[in-house]
Length: 267
Image 1 (tube, rainbow, N blue to C red):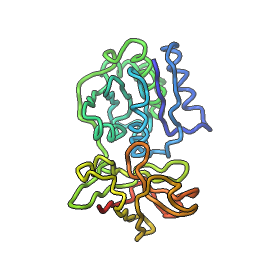
Image 2: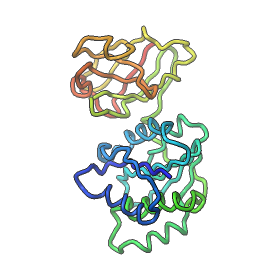
Image 3: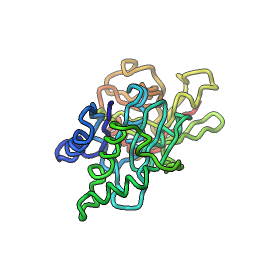
Image 4: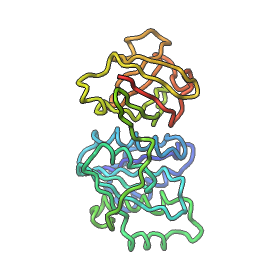
């Protein structure tokens, strides 16, 4: 059984390693894959993209364990979501938003109440800031060891982020930047499916950027090599979302793009 870890813990501190140790202590047979621990701190919108863009490439039965948890210690719920015979265990803070939008078969549950009470009772009395270790890692390990049915409770509607949506109007699709990768490529919430009725990849469309450096207008290209080094472009990325880049450069820095900045595609 694969457990894929997604966190904002980084690699400087021992937090991710401790979670892996807890999982191994409960389910030694689990194969743990570090999807990434480099999500920007607290950026659930970015985690939502990374989770969705990775989902289809993991085998049936995979358990994703996502802990980007700015609400740790609060009354936010512990969520279990299932789609395509895979699952994710995560704080209910919007992490599943893009999965919810794109995977119509997604079903979401609250983690089982009695099991959560047991886990909370067994953690140190002073510990209210490391639910990744105390709650989420054990939930994933128990699911891997004995099945999801042993950790799920009632069905619930998940918390959803508005930033991951796209808005379609006549001749236009608007969205926001939802992830910036290490190259500075800025990935938006506009998906190729948003324009499928146009029966085109919109190669002649214009992309308007409404970030901190306003007034930028880009054309859609097939790939980076279609433009000169240092030139900005828009293109359909490998997950089907509209992306903005600078060839051999950093679009986020050069175009002053940040998470949640608005982008508009004019067909």
